[in-house]
Image 1: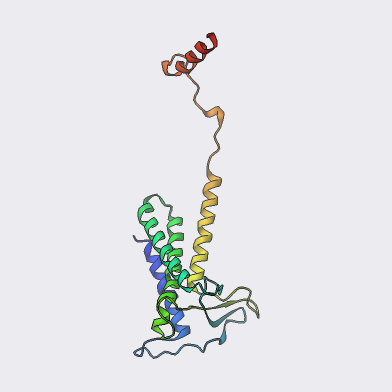
Image 2 (image 1 turned 180 degrees about the vertical axis):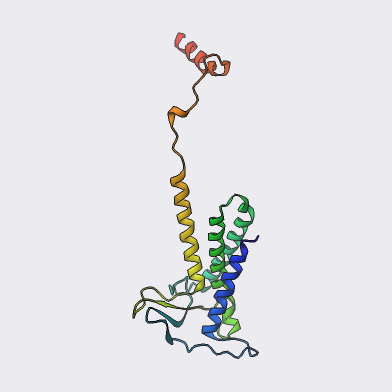
Length: 203
């Protein structure tokens, strides 16, 4: 499916930016990244790169004790979206394909953090890794929880999907009663109901 190239690009950009912030876990790529908790200006004082990690859902939202649950849920959701795309690709609109591909890319991007980062960086067991967040948006203060590329892809994908669903719903034509076909009294098929009704009244 060609549309999955969008998913691959999202995952690649997401993981590259996270490794640039966190640093490389491999000795043959000696890159140390940013100190944890540090921040620097990216676009004046509106967008900053602030390195934090979380074990929660997205946008820094954390619920203690649910690390494995989030990881398993991400796996199930990713498989479900991939299955849906494969079996419904022909009838999906282009916008719907793009939206689902973005959501899938975001889910896989954060899934890699949760499942593998703990092992890659020798910090936690498998499935206990923390998601790297670094986009800090807001003038001189953060207006939103710190997020990453994967979170952005999911948000854009879900928003696009909702807009398309709303447009499709409003575009459905209303049924005009005057446009319905009238019964032809000369057609025996149309006379069945009338005959039965007359017999019932007579009885």
